[in-house]
Length: 168
Image 1: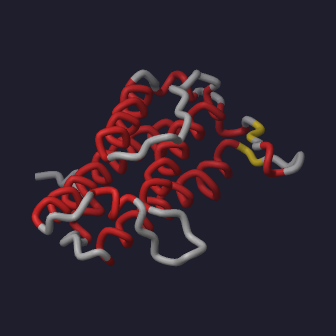
Image 2 (image 1 turned 60 degrees about the vertical axis):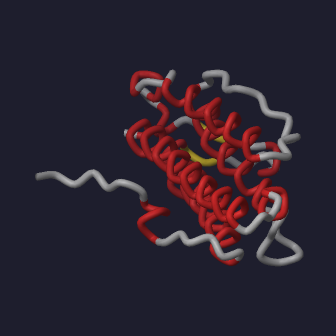
């Protein structure tokens, strides 16, 4: 169950984020603005810039899966400064997600999940996904979207949601 709630959703969200970033690059190119201006933009002085928002999205996806499955993920040193470097990071995480299977998540619903920041507190795997991983992922994607939108990138809800799995 946790596989279906995480890996496909993380992958889809990363795909949508990459498309939104591409729209940002197209606007920067059309306006003759360095992409680094957008990557360093933020909504408020005390929030992370777009670059860090993307790093946080990828970290949330991969670290959730690492904590649930124990399967090693690619390491990133958070030194990306360009769109191609961010896209490489997204691709690395997408490749990692594709390496996981539902069997890797067997029994993870009740696994005790903790992080160093939680000071000896823990959550079950299910609570971790519902209360931490998914909301955290969506927070950083939404903030990245809002930064680009605030800077004039023409993105909308359909860009954020991506292709929906409609049935005919």
